[in-house]
Length: 203
Image 1 (tube, rainbow, N blue to C red):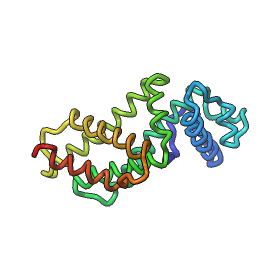
Image 2 (image 1 turned 90 degrees about the vertical axis):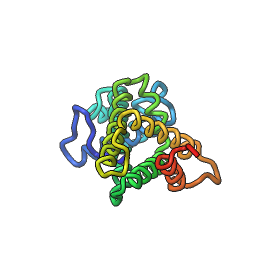
Image 3 (image 1 turned 45 degrees about the horizontal axis):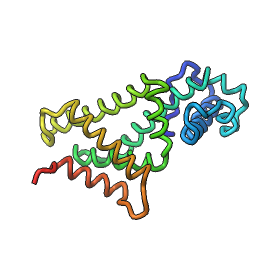
């Protein structure tokens, strides 16, 4: 994952501690992604991470705690992927295309994200809601910026932001998670979605 800063009361004070926490989070992503929250175990996470079982509790109080931290970490990683993808773009429509392309590439490399975020709805509803509300606000801000630049309509707001997020989520599900041989590239998918955004579907 992209982030090294976790919203967790047990913040490591040393570089070694940060690396150990990172190992645990990366191992947890695999464990929860493969087995789901209820079948996953702390002992399996520590084995995957190559960390002593007792060391787990230096960083997390429970399986629930590392799951919550992982959802936050994944949300931050999605943000980083989009931010890196749009770094060189200035045109608002190009920014949306690049952000979607960045997300599709990220999801292709971290397929576990869909299962983990979906499970968060039931395991930790607050983090589930925060994940989508945060993304929705970032998109809404980009739409406001686009309107200010005179490229997008001035009446765009939360409804349109959530509509765009829904499109992005399901494009990721189809082309990053359920991808098949011969599918268009993430860039081509993002380009098609961007054309839809720019021109709509009306003849």
